[in-house]
Image (cartoon, rainbow, N blue to C red; front, side, top):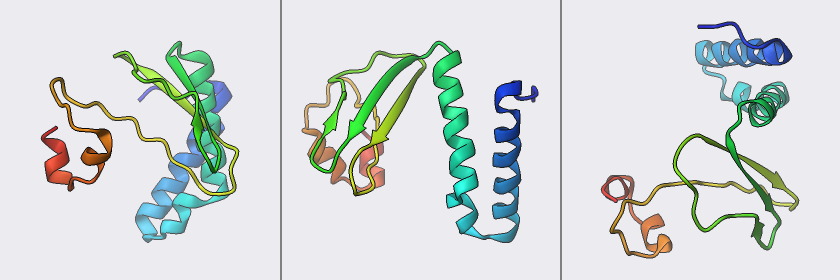
Length: 118
């Protein structure tokens, strides 16, 4: 593995140390620690600034998501989600196979094995 770029070297080392610690101790709190979240955020922001990926910027509020495109092109890309709400929010990007016509809400209700078929 190549060394991490200098601007994120310390963040990569932090992530690796915390991941090893969590894996060896079974302490799942390691994976939600503030240090891990900060390092992960710094690495993500570095990637978005320097890797030349197509980018999607999404803003989540407690009432809506803004900036979500109807379609996303193929290839490498990055997504940046900012939570401006009081509640936690997640963004899930999936590819639905060609020819699938069921509404996304219907697909979300499928169990994992059924979902893989789509």
